[in-house]
Image 1 (cartoon, rainbow over the protein chains, first blue to last red):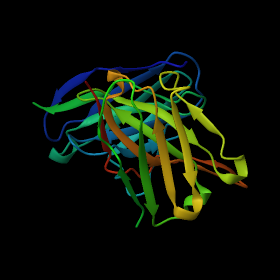
Image 2 (cartoon, rainbow over the protein chains, first blue to last red):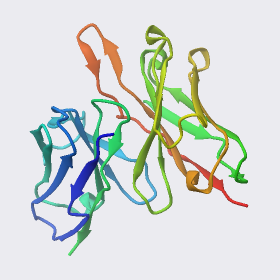
Image 3 (tube, rainbow over the protein chains, first blue to last red):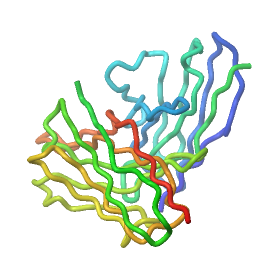
Length: 107
Length: 126
């Protein structure tokens, strides 16, 4: 199975900051990588798929990059509604697997 | 508007069984693969499994942790997705989400996971 490792597991940031979250796959997954945002008590929300394609309706402050084994999610101009937990997911082979999550907290 | 509504979560004893359901609306259900994802209390997301569409013979895929114990099925006439949970273990305690999977088109596979239900809680405890 492909393991997805996110770092950091948590981070503190201020409103207006730019943050970057990293996701590493245990083997080459091409660009079969997605990112999700989850707020407490809510279902996850899809942000990005195919490493860098924004889902419909997702603001351009979210961006993704990478290919192969190393990927990043960048959030610019952090706003109160962006404080949440973010997960990466690979979807190129079975079983699909998620990273452990990165909790973005207010500094 | 795409809508997914799960139901059927309950408290079950270890070794017991349960069936949870998801009713879909607002899109052509039969065109899409459908997935189940779960989240144990205070933990991360875990993909449970997938059922493909009729064109792909409703074939299924499962995570190793549930293979042989859980069964995913669908009823396209009723726009419904099901998850049969057997031989339940305490570690199966989680919120179970149904999510709209991708779909195959002439141009290729279109990624899904863009719509999720609110989740249904399955608690396995004696």
